[in-house]
Length: 167
Image (tube, rainbow, N blue to C red):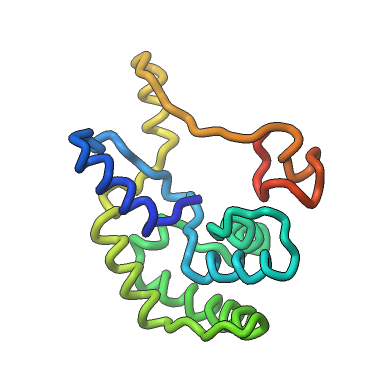
């Protein structure tokens, strides 16, 4: 999953330090962290402190498994993205209202998505052929991983776990 707003800040910081990000790619299947995910994560943490990062990770995984998630590849198809957001946003606004938070605007989210598409669109790829080629050419591949068995959703110390499966 990717939080495009945070990623753009990180890219700017890395490039400001003189490091090229020309080889940074994101798979089109990665789920997007939207502002409502962060808001809901923080609101849920208030009533039931599990020690989350409040970065929206749990709510994104919830949407992914409930077939409500939006993925990076959806940014490249604005009409489809609008249709999906029109379906998902009323539910998210209902959840926000439950926690006493104001609703989010479809227009604002679509404008944010347009910015993400403009700035990140060329980096959104189908990573499978890219990785296959890199392996065949003996290139180095950096994979991100964290945590361990005790934080695994199924095998860890539930409910004090991550929403992913780090094993």
